[in-house]
Image (cartoon, rainbow, N blue to C red):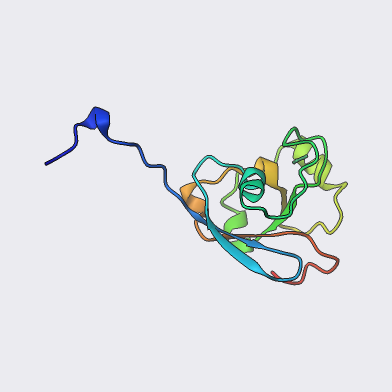
Length: 121
Ligand code: FES
């Protein structure tokens, strides 16, 4: 028996995102499409500050994206690039976690929290 269309629950895809902590520990999480990396981190007790709560007024949500997925992200805005200039531990694939929205194309993406050496990616 099929369920009438109006009663079907719409299920959002849940791509896997791997968070890499400064100590190298990894957490693979299923994150709903449309969620920001910052919100996903907060929802899963990943230690990203996000002092301005996604208003792009700080750079405390800085993450380093793996090279394979970096090119799948939309280009950063001028404001994001200006804030990344102020962040410490910036790498060529750095982004602000509050500006990355999870999409199906990002399935398997690794995001590392910056460290003094950033050598885990
Ligand atoms: S949380 Fe402040 S810029 Fe992302």
